[in-house]
Image (tube, rainbow, N blue to C red; front, side, top):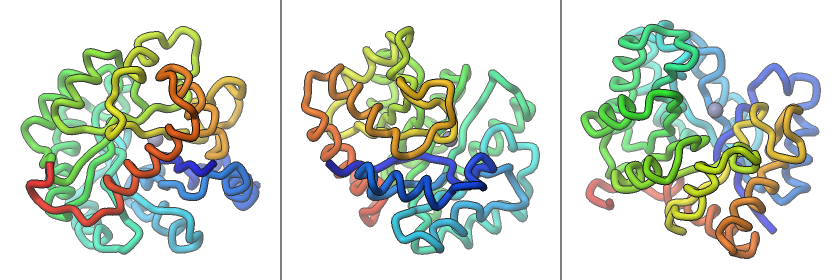
Length: 264
Ligand SMILES: [Zn+2]
């Protein structure tokens, strides 16, 4: 069985000792491709994922300022993004969005930086990868205003319930489930995993964070996306092989197909 991890942070310090081995284990587990998220520790270094994707053929890269780092974004950051978006392995802009849980950057700054990056994604004709924590209604308000659905997008590490999933689906988003869906108390997320249409479903690890059961509490790694796919399959009453095939096809259509305006 083959799978794709649609969201992982392989640049994390937590992989410094054994990054090669982590990637080898992923491949051995059938996780044949991974999207390395480029947020890193924020600007000025916005190429963390590109450096990995240049080195490893099975990795794709994104570029983006995480809401935590919104205060570090400058005009120079945006200028770099416009350039880096042309790199052949850069497949999306993210993770971008709003995080009102930690509030590491002021909320008005988060909103401005999120909006600006949606404009950059539109200009580059790339899908967006959204991080939204305790900020759902502001996130939806801003995407309605600034996002171009023609180029696609995903709500990454979905932690809301079915109503929010429907709202995002109506706007044209894909929904990506992480290890959170395997947590016993995450009943709303599990309910959402049942109702997402087949052609909008993705799975991810968000490694090194949020390891799925039975690895919960330990460092996460892309090989563990298998556990999340199994859980989603169980919730939907589908064979895990089907979920694997579906999420690969969705990833390829969202991130690897040449976008054309009006395709949604
Ligand atoms: Zn992430």
